[in-house]
Length: 116
Image 1: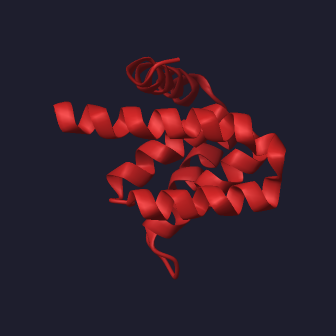
Image 2: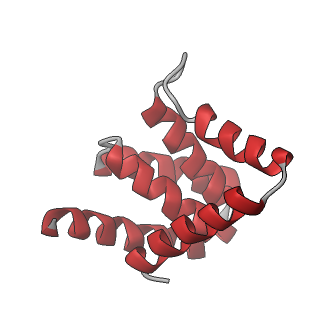
C-alpha cells in the first residue's frame, strides 16, 4: 500500500470504527493516542519506541504509522537508523523484511514532505 493510500485508508477505517465501536474500543483508541504524548519521556522518544516495537512485532502498518509520526516529530535519519539497529538486535534477522519496508517508506515520507 502506498503512503497516500495508507493514510486515507487508516483515516476512513478509524472513523468507521470510532463511530460504530463499543465504549471499550473507543477507550482503547483514546488510550493509544494519549500514551504517545509528552510525559516523562518526550513524544518523539515514544514514537521511536513504538517504531522499534512495531518492527519487532512485524507489523508493517504500525511501522508506517510510527514513521509518519517520527517524521512529524522531527526525528532525524541518524535517530531512525539507531532505532532500526535496536529493532534488529532485539528482533533478529526476521526483522529484515520489515526493515526493507521501513527504509522504503521513510524515503517516501521524506519525499512527500519535500513536495508539499
